[in-house]
Amino acid sequence: MNKKLVVDLINDVHQWAKTLPGNYRTGKFWRSHSIAASNTLIGLCAIVSSELWCRLRENGIEARKLMASSSLGSHVFLLIDDYIVDPTVSQMAEYKFKDYVILHEKEAKHWYHIKNITEFKNPADLLKKQIKWKWPPHQLVREESLRLEDTVRI
Image 1 (cartoon, rainbow, N blue to C red):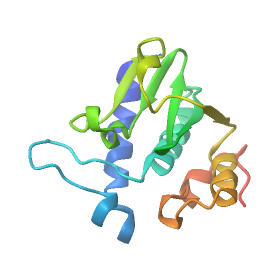
Image 2: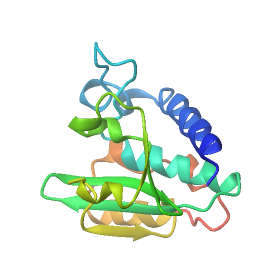
Image 3: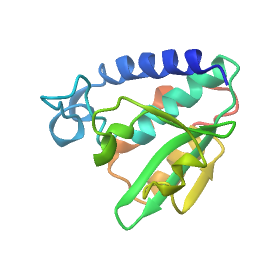
């Protein structure tokens, strides 16, 4: 894995996420911590991870799109080789001051939010499941993340 390229793409996607309109980045879905240098991405894990997945593919990096589910809710992140790449880890209390995490999956086994894993083929596959599972509309994968040729629009 080209970690520098992955980090650069995460930073690009974070900048992209800041341009999202309306309730994607307001209220409880986009909060700034007064102490932290970065914003949390509450409610944007599917959106940000899907856009990152596309940008990784466009740069020749294969990633698996995963969702963990628990009684606390669901969380979407990526797996590249054997590394968890979570561009919205700031949603998790113990990582609220981090913009992202790239962590070997063996090190991530203790994470409460990396359990009961579902894998998706692409952002469209995730979007179909989000609709079926009645996710809030402001958390659904966005149209621009359905741009790759193997991603069928709904």
